[in-house]
Structures are given as structure tokens and as C-alpha cells.
Image (cartoon, rainbow, N blue to C red; front, side, top):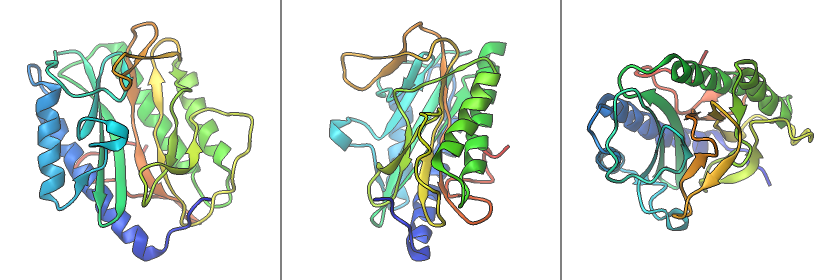
Length: 256
């Protein structure tokens, strides 16, 4: 069953996502050559706990860290560790926060210093795909309209949409109904209604769409070693324009 949230619930979700976006801003400011993904994870946990929330990811199905930090060919669920960032790499940072019984969730991809044209175009296309998906998430549309909007932008840019991982509903649980594919499954899906809360998150590969999960059971990489980008917002479906819960004026993504 897909929940329709009351405005009081949305207010709490808005705060949970503010904590997420503030944490992402702080992390982006710290991305530089030589810093380890473990150091970034520690900064994130301090930000989340300092705001009175708890990391949503820590302990989720046994996940060992507070964030997912995915570098270069890692698509999602990169486990923070001793890997040092290098100039020219792209880094996807996924953050979740649990606040007063509700979850916030958002992600973005940034360059570690200057990046080449391929990586720049990949990040740009994924950001624009998120923007298109968000704008399609309006009451009266169907879920497939969101999926088609994301897929269209990615493929027109010459990139591949990951099909093994999808977006999701979010609220009292981090993953709720409905699943939000980034591609047209051939099924119309549910009618979108005011008060639905969705996490829309395109994961886009520079090469083939295939995925390989490493032996740690979490880290998902591209099958051809080419880079991948990931952008995400948590949003509320409205009768008019959707509300982006994880938006912040300090750093703009998914709003183009």
C-alpha cells in the first residue's frame, strides 16, 4: 500500500531531508584529492548526529557505515574505507537520516577537482534526468511517466540507465512502496496522488547498463569498468509542481 502523508508528517520529512542536504553540502566541500572515503563518512555521521538525527544506512540490513560513497565505476552502495580520492575522479555520495520516526534520503555526484569531458557530460545528463523525473512526479500522472522522463534524458545523451536498482517510496521506512524504476517497464504503475513521498534516483552508466555486485555483498560496479553517476531527491507529489524535500539553496541539483 502506498502511503499518503499528512502535512504534519511531511513537515517532519522536510526536516529529515534538510539534515540530509546540509550533510551533503558539508561533504561536497570536503571532497579533495587525498581524503579517504572513511574520513568523509565520519564527517557525515557527525553532521547527522549533531542535528539530532541518526544515520539511516548504518546497520540497515547489516550495512556497516553511515553513508554510501561510490567512486568512478562504483554505481551505488560503495562502502567507505581507506580508498583515497584522486583528482579527476567522480564521487557519488548517498546520505540518509532518520529523524523523529521518518527518513530523509538524497544523493549527488561531484568531481574530485577537474574532470574530463565524458565525466562532466555523464554528471550533467544524470542531473538533468533527475530534474525531468521530479517534474513528472505530479498528481494525475502515472509512475511510468517519471520512469520515461528519466530514461529519455539519459539515453538521448548517449548513456545507459541502470536497471538493477531503482528509486522507492520513503517515510517511516527507508524503502517503501512503490518502487520507482528509471526506465519504462511496460507497466503503467500507480496513479500519482497528492501526498505520496518518493525518492527518485537515476543511476546512469557511461557504458553498458549491466551491474556486478562485489563479494562484500554491497558494492555494485559497472560491468565494463566505465564510470557511473547517481543523483537523488526525496519529493512530495503535489497537485501542481512537486515539492523537493531535500532541496537546499546552498547546493543545487535535480532542479533544471
